Image (cartoon, rainbow, N blue to C red; front, side):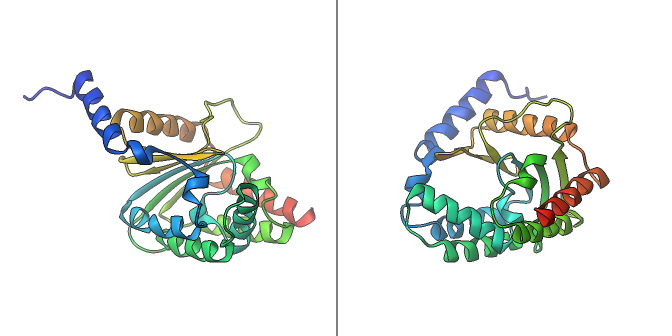
Length: 224
């Protein structure tokens, strides 16, 4: 019987992955958005199309693939204004929505973990936020989507302090921070993030309780 992977094998694989992706591992948003945001969305379409299993942890804003036009417009407008990068918000929103077809087309699965506070972030006006939350509620009922939420007053859990996390199968993890996108492909590091995601999923609420949190957020958006 062939021996299993040793610690040396894992470290070697990590070093090889790091050397191959050194230039793309840490990329500042200012650099990515130097020509606007539309190009970034279009360039990641192949990655989204070939990914079978998405795992997303959202601690700041709703995942891009479940955003409505109104929510995405408010978010991308605020990013453009903050960064001072070229304004192509309308085109970037269309590109984001086009990329999001993977939720409804093809054989893709989505595990979404969203902090409850994210449901209340005023990324857009109240009616548009309510529309976004209703759409999220609808998406969560799809058979290829496994949603979960961490209630604001739920049990303590290990949080991924680095920022929002997008895992593409078992091959790549993208971590979004305030200033940059960190792309991780080293197998050992990817496994660490997936282990953290699994622990977060275990501590989240799912099913009816998760939908109840969204329903409460919708009422709050409409009353505010």
